Length: 421
Image 1 (cartoon, helix red, strand yellow):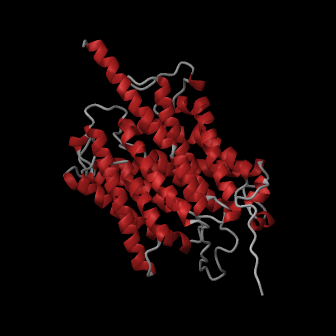
Image 2: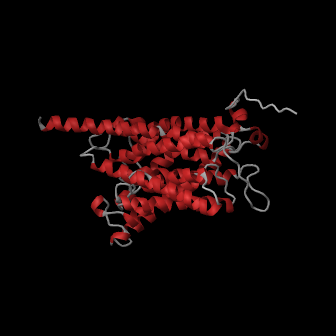
Image 3: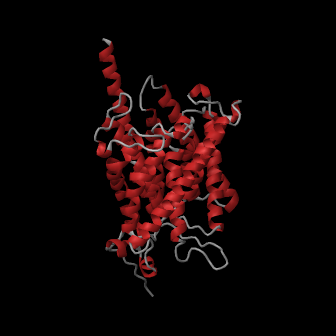
């Protein structure tokens, strides 16, 4: 077999792997949908599922029209300036344009849908649709260009292998700003500042969603290799991803058990997701034992973060902020602590004699992204609110539920409860 044939075969194998990984990441939409639906009340289930469905549609259109050009088009260190509607755009390396686009389009959709959980049960549907398009077409691609498109952070050797910052800190920052502007749900907090539990209607759906996300994350992280090679890096990334998730789930469960007296299932599930978010930036740059440490700390962060939000009266129905925002930051910093130059990082991490060089770069990058996204989304949400008659539904609509008031249907129709004397 000549070199040309070998090259074509390798390109075909790489393309197949990237496409399979993209299809797995697409399944995250189902995972987020089931998780968020399970953790909210029945009267708002249609709404949160509609948000998840339409997130991917809006992300697809926004990323096709403007996002890919901003993220990967030729331009300057801040944004791409060519390739609108993919006209004249190019793929990455040997990957075709379409393979590269679909892989990053599903990542864009994942970032957008993180917000659905944070603003659940109180945001107008038309306002949410507008938000979803803007973050996909503009906000997310700007950050992606800085880090993955050859922008200024990439030139500083900022490292984020699969998106702790690009996807999770971006989505988590937008979720935090959204829930701050909307305010808490009716009845969530008492006058003395204490919080009331507003329990989700189906831990079964939430558990299924968590497991779907765990499975899809193997495509998310391992797919970010963008090539097969000898398969070693794919296996390495899958190993660290799985260990961090398991460690996060265990630490989240045990720490919540210690704090609340019972092994709470919702905290256990979010512990697994925290471990997954935390390892996403460093999955290729750390060894298995370090992945366990990163995930275990992530599980503790999500419990402490949930407690902190309640003390600050910030109502996040599904834990989007502790999982994605807080652990996106932690995971990004973990690269500068545990990363290995021998595994492809520009500098050794602090724990391996590299000093504060890589950690400083990671800190600068993630803080800049958080400030940019938070400021940008504050303006976006305020403008959307002004154009859509407000971000939040009325008090009466919130009591009735968004399924009926926003969509004219019920998630579980035909059920009646009869009591006998």
